[in-house]
Image 1: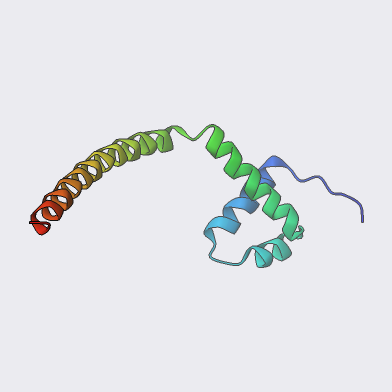
Image 2: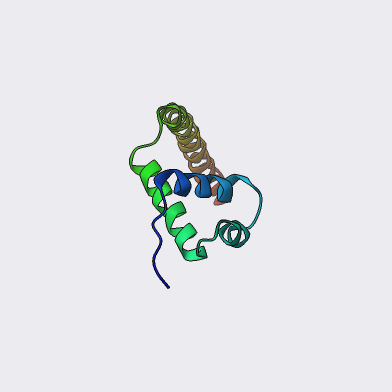
Amino acid sequence: MPQTRFTKEFQDEAVRLALTSGRSRRAVAVDLGVGLSTLRHWIDRRREREIDAPPADRQEDMAAELKRLRRENEILRQERDILKKATAFFAKEGSR
């Protein structure tokens, strides 16, 4: 079977359809006339690109998410420390 080259625009549109149409990847691949493994490769490549260089709007989202997670992490540390102290207190009280 000869290998067909698809334009970048075609690949991007195929990935967009696969991710947003609600249809299975297999159905999208069949409709577009590409192999399922080819479509999966395009999707994986897009995800890698987004991880390496996320769009500007996602960078802001990531910064806000990082700030939220750091705040949550600090609260969890404080709660853990309180529980450790309470455990030690009740262990000491129980041994009397």
